[in-house]
Length: 84
Image 1 (cartoon, rainbow, N blue to C red):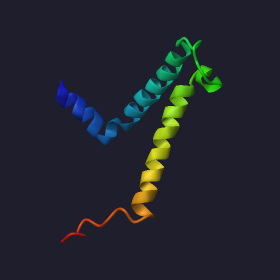
Image 2 (spheres, one colour):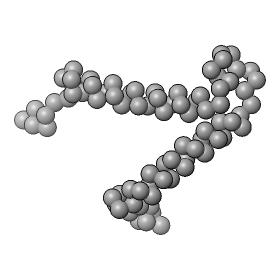
Image 3 (cartoon, one colour):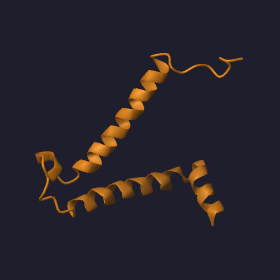
Image 4 (cartoon, rainbow, N blue to C red):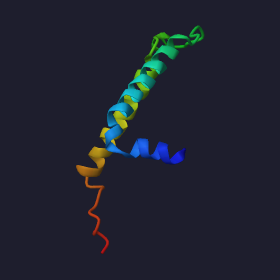
């Protein structure tokens, strides 16, 4: 069983199916966000359906771009043979 799961996520020929499952999971998360009771929300944007999913996705993308910038442009990343 675990061999099949590892094979599914490791092989390139399953990329299209993995992408479809990823999009399905995103749609289900946004749909589930419409079912949450939002009455005690403190801010206006907390009451918007889908806000948590959009905010979480945007935060992850921003974190990736900032870390790439710091690694490549700010000089934090070194070559593999730097300490040799």
